[in-house]
Image 1 (tube, rainbow, N blue to C red):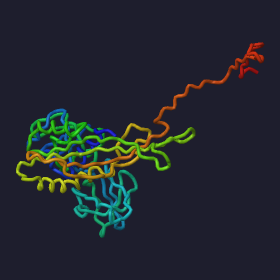
Image 2: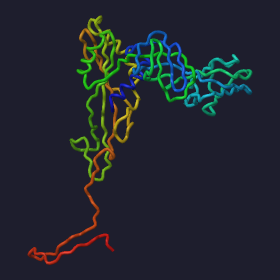
Image 3: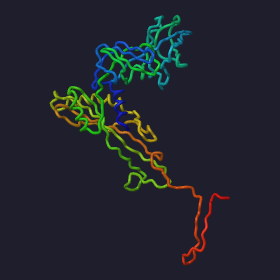
Length: 358
């Protein structure tokens, strides 16, 4: 488990639900051309070249090249690949699609997806047979495209750009830019306190710290050892790793910490939404053995100036034979040198054999 992966996951997901750990500005327009996305914000964004920000809820207008209706079934063709799939177990869970900008107004609106023959075509069922349309767009989520964690490449007060290797629509819609992300990490709570004390005291911060990794007790081991492999056993040992996320909350107006505690309880659902079930990379042979699980959370400290709330999470990793030392000093058995001795241990003859000699 690497702290950087936990921090990245929080920076990616937490701004989708919480405004506590970043600054936020609305997007006025967002466009794409030749691998570069240009974002115009409604007010100054405060970003510099090289800064990292998180864009949330920005959708793309995937262009439609035609809509043809036959027997109440409309076949929609897009000029770039869409992102529609029929992958929900229940039809009730399948999101509707939104069509806009069509030159035949009957197609504009929200529709249930019918079929998805390929990446550029899908069908919807209508209650009438409108004329064919030749323009329009579908409004789609843009995960990893317009939305996601971005590194700024060029800026002015209300505009910045970032590069992407994805093929996107020329125009997006809506969304927010979260910048000055106050999510970081350290090796201990004391180090994080020192870092927080140097920041503006009226902002929330989240810090990620590691906790000790322990080997899980093997239930088939009948002694006090956690694991007792013997020669010939298939080596398998489970590791319980973990980390803690500390919320630092400014609390000068909080007499005894009660209000700050309650705010952290409110925010707990957002950190759970961001982390639980996510598989963290690790350096071992099985790199996604288990997902993050919740262990506990509690009040950590109240100083009057700030309140600290602790969340504890665990993951399980597994060490197998590919992760352990299997170096062998054995060599090929080819030569035998031997002596013949008498009862007085006197050598009376010696010889040698080559085992691979015919």
